Length: 72
Image (cartoon, rainbow, N blue to C red; front, top):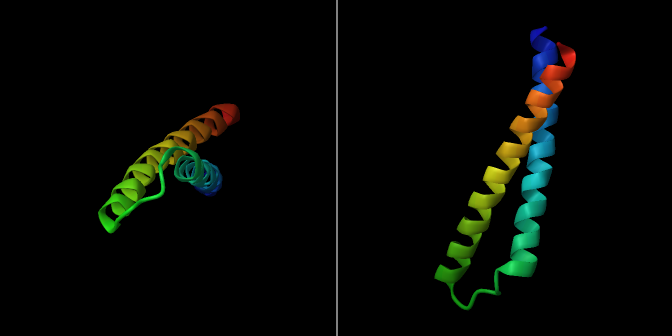
């Protein structure tokens, strides 16, 4: 039982990480302009990291809940 929960949470975490990566990549490539100085670069990476982390965590949590409801 606990082993199944671990596998499901790892699978959901990996899916969330992939979604976070894609969100960060797409934001940095299409939305955020190329930085002119070091501070702009740090701010842009912080903003995209924050949004990508939120997106990855949210998708991972949704996937975990969806997988755990299927088993019941």
